[in-house]
Image (cartoon, rainbow, N blue to C red; front, side, top):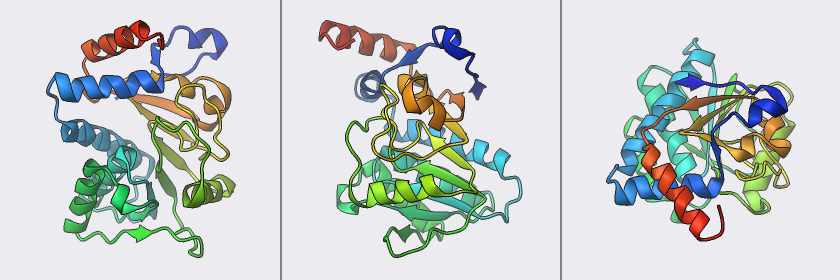
Length: 240
């Protein structure tokens, strides 16, 4: 895992960063055109998260809370939860969102967690958040560009209000726009954010810079060719 630290305003210009749109398109190109299996990318992402979480929480008996949405960011979180469970941790998984709208990758990771004997909880506003020494934030990924609503906003708002917590955000803190760092009504304040492939612009600007804490970069195998092609297509479309 490669770690990069910010060096102030000048340091920003030295970082090879991409927008949320570039990141999503590069993923699509890698999977659909270059033939890289999506589950292989998710497995690498989940492994990077699990390894970092284990380094932050070496005592396997310590309470660990995994917050998961129903998209691929949640899939990364559940993959990490399964790997940690296999490593003798006892993660509590709390899922928010409609399972009927879950991505197939998320549903695959959910079934994997069940097969390991995991019993995820499903978010309700009347339920207290489980105690934890470390929280993995996998509620939303980089594609969020709208105001938060319903249970998502409520859960993220409750995490934001926690006084004593350590949070590891997956790719970008939930509630932060991956493009400009705008806070979308509520956002999860992370101590550490693990970003995949390349830095996202939302980690460097606006509220994103403050909410992401220390940022570490993990290589998960998306070829540079995919990023170059994504940038080319977006430039041609007038969006790059």
